[in-house]
Amino acid sequence: MPILVPDAGPLITLAYADRLDVLQQPGWPVHIVDMVLHELTRNRTPTSEAIAALVKEHALTVVTTEVWQRYQQRLADATAGKGAPPRKTGLGELAVQEYMTRLGLEDPAVPAVFLFEDHKIARASFHLPDSVHRVSTRAYLSFLEERGWIASAEAIERCAIQNGRHFSQIRFP
Image 1 (cartoon, one colour):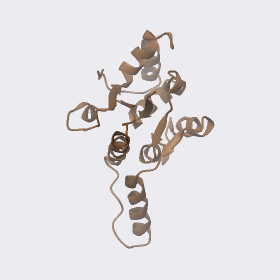
Image 2 (tube, rainbow, N blue to C red; image 1 turned 90 degrees about the vertical axis):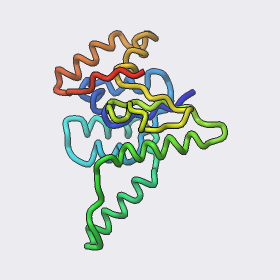
Image 3 (tube, helix red, strand yellow; image 1 turned 90 degrees about the horizontal axis):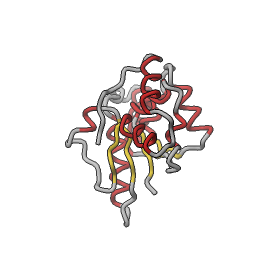
Image 4 (tube, helix red, strand yellow; image 1 turned 45 degrees about the vertical axis):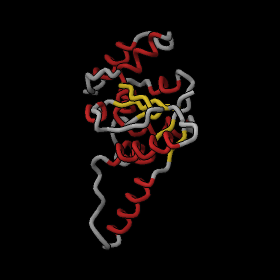
């Protein structure tokens, strides 16, 4: 059974559609990378509370990464006047790659599905182990519809858009 690891984009989209529940439809464990969770909840947004509630109410696994630990240390150092504040751009993706690499190095490798929406993640330069499959939000919703676990992928997409989410048209694979 694979682990489902969502990036920020799919969580935002599903929160806009009020359908975060679909993450658990296949019955796979859902793991959220610490840096991604921080990116989604550090500021109050239209989706931050729903995402935080999902993690808490369903006791989802929050994966600790070195990226997050180093970010926190740099932030503490900057607050104490001991250096520049840490960068924020791309840290979620780095933390996801770190976790996926960890899964791929297990013996045997742990299968995972990385749920994404970002075009840069679809490129070959975003390297993941062979045991990890990249799947876009739209492809994941289509998968759920094909299995009969949701009535309509298009309805969820439309709801997210109607509620203000402008998300990628990427469908991968």
